[in-house]
Image 1 (cartoon, rainbow, N blue to C red):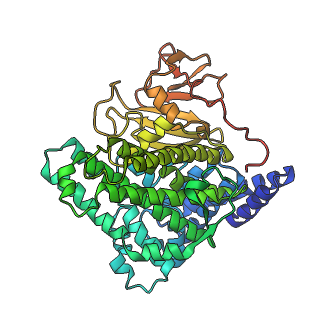
Image 2 (cartoon, rainbow, N blue to C red):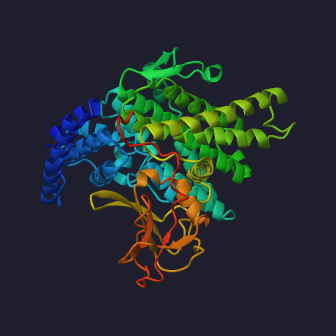
Image 3 (cartoon, helix red, strand yellow):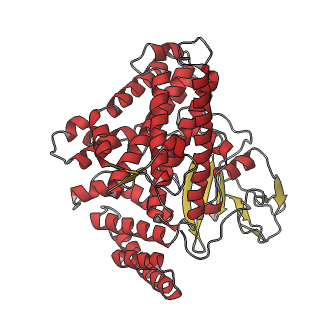
Amino acid sequence: MAAKFLVHSFDCYADDSHSNKIQAMRTKGEALRELQLSLVASQQAPTYDLLLATKMHYASEVLLGVTNLHYAIHTLGLMDLLKSGVLSGADEKNFWNILDNTYIDDTLTRTKVTMAMTAGRLSIYDNDIYLSSTHPAVLAQLGLDDRQFISRAMMHVVVQCPRLTVSIRNAIRNPNDVDAVALAVSQAENLWRLTRQNYFVDYINASIKTVADCDDNTLTDILGYGIDFNHAQEMVIATRYWLLQVFLCGTLDTLSRRFPSQFGLSLLPGPETFHGIDVSAATQLARVVFALGPNPSPLTLIRTHGPFSGSIGAWHRQVRYLLMIQPGSEDSSGSAAAREEALCTALRMKRWVLDNCNVILNRLHITQVDEPAWMEALDCMAGEELPDWIPTKVSFGAEDGEIIMKLEYSGVTANGDPRLSAGPPRVFNVRNPAQFGPQHLREWVKGSGGPVVAKGPPEAGCVVETASPHWLCLGGEGASTDPSERVERDVSAMTPTNAPSTGGKRL
């Protein structure tokens, strides 16, 4: 049934006629019932067939449109199925392909490696099973083809990035702890060494096709050309490798600024070198988007958006680095005119990437992200302190057939600091999460558009403003049961005025 649902979803994506929509929805209901029965039957020992069915449900929901975030539930299901290793009865090659296309791709719901980096915790894939089975020395003995070897070796590094950011943050909070600083530097050295192996670059260079004629010519003087690939898997590997370089260069930037003496004694490259690598990787990611064309599939957009949005961090750091360089310092190689030109380029690229990330989000009918919120998130992914507005835990649920995003705030921040508003854990349920971005949460936490008494009838632990299409409600442990004390945070200011219509074609 999952395969049938995927076929009908593709038919609906290709031609969203009323009859195709009805057929896809009918098949979806049947497929979901069968998936639920399979989940109940295999609770103790998940099967490979269940994994395949869940992956097909994920792809089907994406083809039907990501606005309602129904696919997020299947994302969480895939995570749960994959976290313990290879499933019984699995075709090992296909299992690793599914894993490779799952553990990092989806940054719209931010539930995997990137979410771990912004939440201050380790990745669920950072365990002995996956670390031992993806180590390059082990892979070399398995007789894998180039694509399999490259993708697994890259996973070995990617899933450890959250661990590195946690170590850097711990060192920043304890600068006099020699062991904490040494651990952060040592982990950075190890991951950096693993990413600098020639087999990564050789494989990617052999996969790239240049595209001279691109629809967007605004940055031809900087980018020169676009980048395309023969196969989707080649695009995934290349963009992930460039994103990995951006991630690691971000951590090196934090270490070099926070601990210049210890960094200078390490085996890590100097600021001018790693900033050059950072910008080069970001430029390649920009070239991929440069050549996307007018009608990419939603799956391509989701896979592209994550690495592309992460590349903003490279330009953000480049601007900061160039502004900090003092004339006559060791880092001030080149003329002042050359540095000024590089600064102008970085500013243009940063603006272009931000704008085109929002173009992709518009195509997917997801709310746009503003610059301040995204810059704070990117800095914390590089090891800086976590912003207070980042929840302790993010999860998804269902209510009345719609996806609800649940944001949990404990009594302390992810950094371990007491929150400004003391008390028991609070849970905020967000309807229509596709139209709710980090900037909205950031504004709310910082006090914009304070609380108002709800107009609708109170429910247990939650009051809903019935006139508001997008709402945030307080519930969970510690919620007031007195109707006079129940309030709804006014999210009218958070609701984007330029949210695109969900009618018609999705692309």
